[in-house]
Image 1 (cartoon, helix red, strand yellow):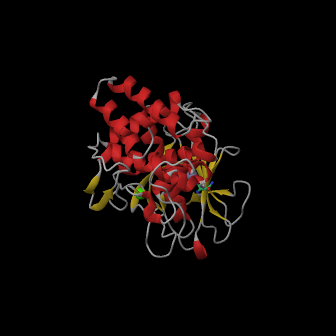
Image 2 (cartoon, rainbow, N blue to C red):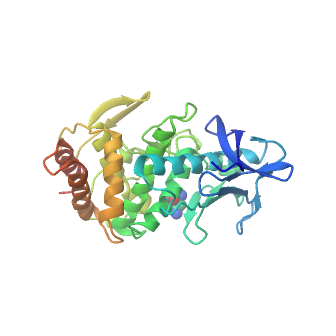
Image 3 (tube, rainbow, N blue to C red):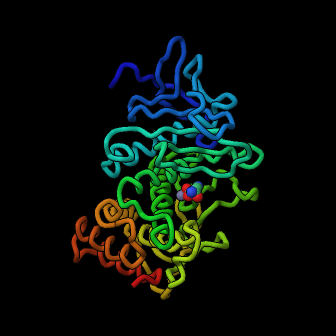
Length: 328
Ligand code: ASN
Ligand code: ZN
Ligand code: CA
């Protein structure tokens, strides 16, 4: 390891106390992670363009004031990097070892976070009244995964392919959250459960039964392509939950889920690790910019045959799970 890499500590907004890779600079330190492609985290200071200022600190103990959201973003990027590298064998968003960068404190009362392929960066608003930064780990991994999708299948961000694009970010956002194994923000099949985006403590999305958010679809239908991509992602998120954990009631990590099926079939899950690897292989090998739900079924079955064989239980379960969300 490079001697310039320092190990700091940070107090985050949502993930408790975390370890951070930093870089020594003059008499202080910066949020620059030399072990992960040189990922840097910047303070936009409520601005909306450029990079703002690289976070600097006189000591390697982070989290005071404006730094706090920066700690989340830096930590989230590091965990997501490690997830892709250690679980999926991908080093960096493009697989070339190069880092993206993160910007926090975007705008005023901005209730969103986004990936932008132009800057090759993640950006986070501070939420309603600048009180709830959108920097939780699952959101960070969701946004970073948009970069992976753009660098691979490049799923077009509208119609059914747009729903699959969004679901891909929720799937790897969730897989990264489980991978992090962080006591303050344990893995779950909820998206944005930490950021209180609705002001009532409820998560942004639910993977076991997406319609619990009042908008997302649980099943494929012929009109799915005209639904906003953050709701047409529902059936694919549901697919991932069912394939991982199975249908019906289940408690995972203390959270209760209840996942229905379109045809009232019973699915026995193959586990999250296999489901994650199947989705990743399909995304990077068989999905294209115009892949729709029907094509995703074919693509994941090919990926499953590659990984586990065409006569495997995994293959049969993938087929049954697509049928369970009405994709035949
Ligand atoms: N947070 C949103 C997303 O990642 C931003 C958007 O709608 N583009 O999908
Ligand atoms: Zn997204
Ligand atoms: Ca979550």
